[in-house]
Length: 156
Image (cartoon, rainbow, N blue to C red; front, top):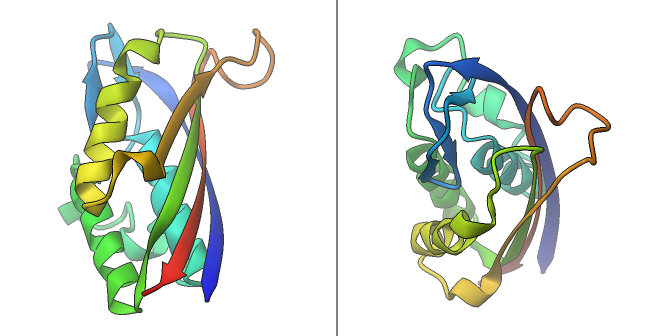
């Protein structure tokens, strides 16, 4: 049995914040606003997995009203989502994330991002796709960063 999930998230830029995407800190003069570390790509990924499993979204699992998630490391939250996936008998078939950002340039960091996610899922990096694109000055990118994630989960 397979399950497919899609996740989407967006965070606006904020001063005096780190920019973290897929667990990789990107040198930048600004970061993203959020209750946790605001790793928009991992948030979209967690929503995709939770959606595939019909478990709601990250706001249900890790509410921003709960102080224990203030400045939380999203990669650690991903480990909790991964545990729930494994408990239900599923493993990652593959994942595909598209990060939407006018700036900064993300291509130099994509190999590290892929490696971080492969480590989190204890899987071959060939199952992990991370891409970056712009919106050519259109849409919301420019005031923040968005991400789409798709996952294929397979029954063990």
